[in-house]
Image (cartoon, rainbow, N blue to C red; front, side, top):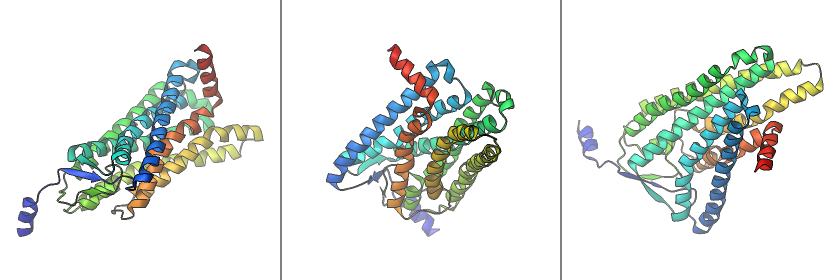
Length: 312
């Protein structure tokens, strides 16, 4: 009873201090220039991809529909985390209000969950295209593609509401320093002065359902694709089938490796420097590389890009 009264009398944290990537001034200046360039390049690449997909009729196919959704998501995703990263590099450790921190966390969780399910939908699309080509127009008709995309976005929102509500309801009595460049789950749990068992349970269950569930769908799709490719009679057919999946497989591997290491366990992570490095991989590097890996090496996209340049 006394402990409860003491907790109730404690002053609730009104703001958090984000330490950012580095506290050394010389390094911060160089990193600011690098990450600002990466941010602008990411926005430009994904804007070009979205424009090409929706302005060229030959790219209005299920695969490019999902790529358009992914590019839109990547622009939102990088815009949630990058401003606070850049602010920390420009001014040093920055103060963020509690409400801002929870809002950033909400959008971050929503977008990362949406990306997981979108990647699984894209793997399923490639499975149907290679393993069941005669049924592809039926199984991946526009209504199905739209349903998969909407389910991905709504599912991310619902999971984020549950997780953010649990984290925001915790008591934060101090200290209020987050050793990170944005408001993430693990650093916030480390600062809570109340029991986090329920929040960790919700975090773990959502990781099982979203991360592991979508990864299993992607892995099952690619196992089936691998078997189908190995049964193809000609080497040329095998190369063509593999080339359509290799880029997606690379992105899935990078994204899930970093994400699962951080989020798919119900314990607070202590190695925050490693946490920040891995966070940079999937919040900065992956959104910048995805358009190059997926689209800019694709012959259909290259052709649409050249025609756009020729018209202009």
